Image (cartoon, rainbow, N blue to C red; front, side, top):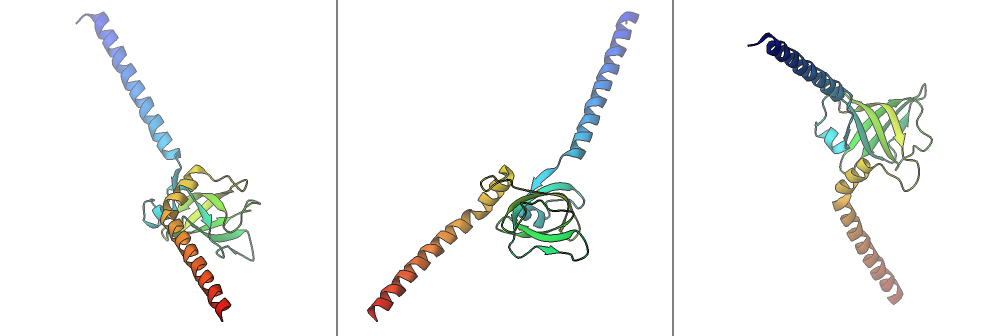
Length: 169
């Protein structure tokens, strides 16, 4: 092999190895910084590794907010309509945080399958909901909505029958 060709080949090999190393390091660093969105059902099913940073979204369960007397510790449950997951947070909650509200919490899941949140975000108006939360709620509530509509129709029929019965007597 000619010395000039040999030098070019070595240079090209070093460039390929260098580029491959750079791409590999970039992919590794990106994989460490990705925060996946998970639903309460996915957390309860164990699809999240312990200590993995995630974003979890759902509705705050009514009556589940527990505030500590001596600090800023708050514990509450979030639901996607199928499963409730407890979230523990230390800090000041957003002004718009309330029961029945759609929220997204960022944090880590511990061995008890409780999410230790480092940040809690609440929706900013009555109509907006993060797309991930909306999708999770829609998929989990599909059967629930049909059941609620069916129950509402049955209750309306019972009320109509009862009022008819009361009018007769």
